[in-house]
Image (cartoon, rainbow, N blue to C red; front, side, top):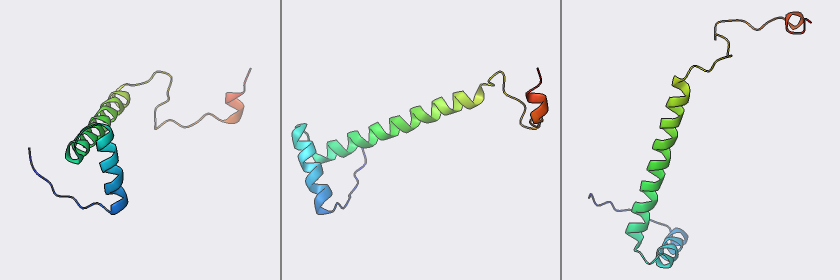
Length: 76
């Protein structure tokens, strides 16, 4: 593991200490777990987005096609 130094303002430091104490862990572990969770959320989102964009949904028009005229869309 790599070590990183960070600077926190008093309010954030107080919040982090309280949150870590409530979970019975240190601030370093709290930050490490929060960053890992954020990373996993972003990776999961990107994977789902790539899968969605790779699929060619049926029923959608070609991007180069123009919209039908109002009269064409409302013909009986």
